[in-house]
Image (tube, rainbow, N blue to C red; front, side, top):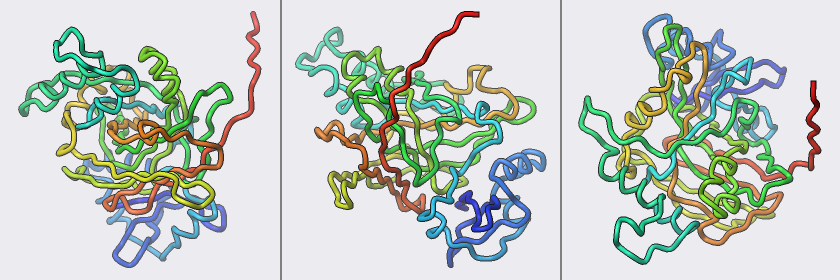
Length: 330
C-alpha cells in the first residue's frame, strides 16, 4: 500500500491511499504517524490499520501537489523528534563517483587506496552477512532534525554560505520507535538527500558539514518490503527543459550492504531508540549530476522518480538569504 499525507482544500489534514483507480482518503485518520502508533498498539501493520479503518472518497492528489498541499509522507507535531540520517558508499558504483570527487586512484596497492575506496571494499566484503550475523558498519552521517524536512513541491533552500546545492536520489527507510524502544519500519520513500558536493570535495572530513542541508522525501510512503531491484530516473529541469537526466538503481541487488545491516548499525545506538522518535534514514546512491560536471542554479527543479514509488519527488532549488548570527554571553 502507498500512502500520502496532504491538506484538503478546506485546510484539514488527510491521509490517502493509492488504489487501482486513484487515491482515496483513509477514514478517521489525520496522519501516518497516527496509523503507525495504532499499528504498534495492535501488533499489526500500517497497511492493515488503514484497511480496517476503510477508504472513503476519492481525492485529487495531483491537484494537491500542484497547489502545494502535499506534506512529507511522515511528520510529527514536534519536528525535534525527527532524525534525518543516512549512509554512503552503499551502492555498487558509488565508490567510483565519490572517489572521482576526491582523488584519482592509479595504484592497486591497499595503502594507496583512498578512504572512500577502502570503505567501499569493506562493504563489498562484509556488507551482506549471513542471516543472524553482523556485517561491517557503513559510512554514516547526520543531516538534521525535522525542521530540515521539506515537503514534495517545496523549495530546497541552500544556505547563503554554501558552495553548491546538488541532488542525491535515494531510498529512505521510515521508522517509528515504539514505547519499549523497539524500532518499527513503516516502509520506504523516495528521497532527495540534498548536499554540498563542492564543500565535500575540498576534504572528505568536510562531509559532515556538506550534509547539514534540507532534504525531501515522498510524495508516497510504500509500505512492506523494499523491492530487491529499484530502477528510477533522476533529472534536473532548468526553465522547464531537461538540463540533465540519468537512471539510478537501488534495492539490495544494486547495493553492497543489506538493508538489515544498515538498520542494525543505525539502531544499535541507544540514542536512536528513544520512544516516540521518528527516523528517516537514507540508504545512499551512486548517481550524482555533480559527478557529470553539472552546476545547479536557483530555480532549477530536481525530479526523482521510480515506478514502485508512484508520484515523482519534485523540488525547486532556492538560495537562502545571508544571516548574521550573533552569539550572546549569559
